[in-house]
Length: 157
Image (tube, rainbow, N blue to C red; front, side, top):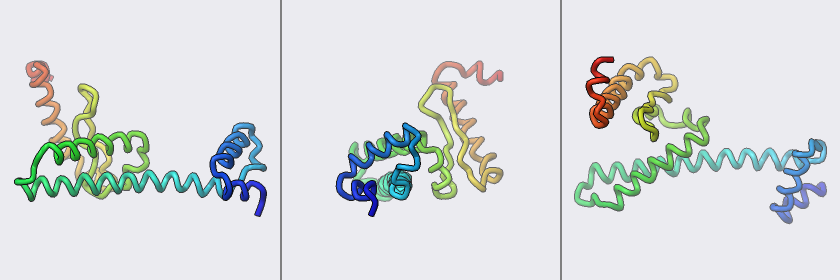
């Protein structure tokens, strides 16, 4: 076991700081490459697990909302809202996770910024789904225009 490998097993923080400094200095021959690679892979897998966890929570609450109307309340609504926000942020920070979403879960609809709408993430079903989802986005744009008082402008364009 090399010195770098021993530090990895004895003091992870010290190991991480040491390897980060070696990389910054360009001293790549001295880094603990095997463990650095393992940690980077682990970070990516952690993001995948976060995606799966958030989707599971969201879908479970959406199913409860739909099939148990007597239990609907602020708690379920808040959980659904929070998970949607967290999923959007996770995917904005890690766009390469989007293809890992199950089929038929593209990003369609209004973004957080005014007048920004999405119709992406269709994967291999892009041509099949894009026309139908384009209609959904067009309807959302019309509704947003009407709410903001731009109905006449939107109708002319």
